[in-house]
Length: 228
Image (cartoon, rainbow, N blue to C red):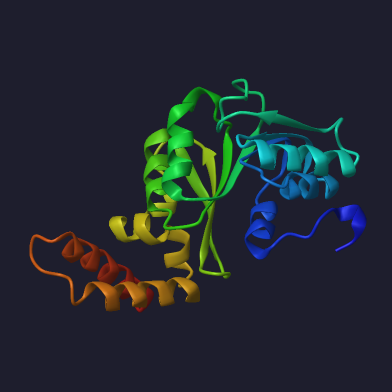
């Protein structure tokens, strides 16, 4: 990593970076602003908007952008989620390092302000985001698991018409729970995740229990992972 390329990122944010390429991009809940600085320095975006709600991280982001000499290209705004953006202002946006339901709330509160491309990195299972994307007219273009403290999901969603082809010919509930591309690729991190779910759910499952339904989804995923 050279100084000209910007600050170092951990593996999950490096994965997010590889999925972003746009003229204008917003990083929501940016904290330290390292991701947008790297995006701009590596030529993956031409202009960025950094949104941060909390005063401490907001000041930190402004300080880092100023130190990088990028105040003319990275604008830091105070606000909650997508609210500080004008409709159509940015071509893409990233939201990272939060719980899936926190990210989901941001997406649901400001549908008119969402860009055509979203890159999302929740800190827990991404099923709720995949379900939202299907209903909101976004297709899943990339679905990764990145090793770290635990396996971090990273999703790229692009707005597109019609059914999402990513889910074609897969067990639907298993694909929503675990990720269609990860199932197709028989991702080793996903295999470990499904095995852990099977061990956890088997002693809890019984007719009528939620654990029974979840076990059946895990079994469908496991069957696919071990199929021809």
